[in-house]
Amino acid sequence: MSLEEYKGVFIFAQQVDNELSSIALELLGKAKSLAEDLDEKKVTAVLLGSDVKGLVDKLAEYGADRVIVVDDPALKDYRTEPYTHALASVIDEFKPEILLVGATAIGRDLGPRVSSRVHTGLTADCTSLDIGDFPLEPSPVRETKHKQLLMTRPAFGGNTIATIACPDFRPQMATVRPGVMQKIDPIKGAKAEVVEFNPGFEENDCYTEILKIVKEASSVADIQAAKILVSGGRGVGSAENFKILDDLAEALNGTVSCSRAVVDSGWKPKDLQVGQTGKTVRPQLYFAIGISGAIQHVAGMEESDIIIAINKDENAPIFDVADYGVVGDLNKIVPALTKKIKEALAAKN
Image (tube, rainbow, N blue to C red):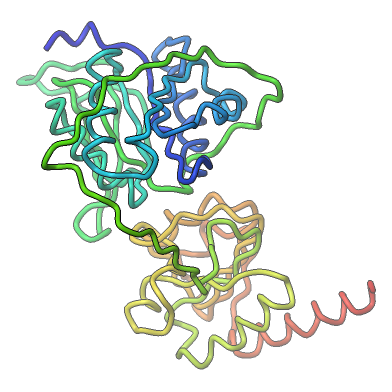
């Protein structure tokens, strides 16, 4: 493999039912930053699907300089084999140095298969991406390679952080956790170069047949889309005691979320978990109530605009990242806060 042949930062622009997934726009934002560090001029989005050319302009507005479109009826709905064939063919033809894929249900299925087919590595579920030297510490027995993609992800059940590189194979591939990277502000009217590419599709024994698609309506709120989160930890005490957090969230028109300890105790569903092994969130306002502030949780919410912590332990690590902190009994503080907020809103109206 000649590494010099591989150039540019590519992202897989996931779409479902001809609607771009938010992760595609988040990846474009990070790809722009990585491209600048590599002195690359273009960021390329790879768009797979059927009748999806109408999505090109939105990709351009969020940072794509070029969009490679593979448009074919075989790609109408996600199926592992045709999508793997399409994306692997794009890699073989255009030779990207870096390819980013969202760590969604689709991306977790597609990424490993594509990396295997093009004989490269894949770092899964990344929470941070940077360009730098590898090894991180100079070694007398190993050559230092510059401008490598340094991929950071939780390891060992979220108890440590690992930084991984792929210095000897290309492309450098990573799946990236949704909500971790930030979209750029859209550039209205931006246009991208469009490259139409189709490797051809022939049904084989690996093609699955979709008999029926059943869409399940979730009753659990999407915490990654919430602007205000009221998050509770083990210190809340019980599932029943989350009622006081529900009341606060309702007063603020916010959403309740939780820490891993709460999920492990069976008090709340996994979809509401914030942290390295849960979801990464960036609300405008984040309440951390009865949450100690372990690194695994902080990694999932530290980019919130304003963080308010309520904890009886004045030495809790959560206060190190909080903008405002209240030390005391949450069972007294939270209801009092809710009451004051309701009174203020009533007076305003």
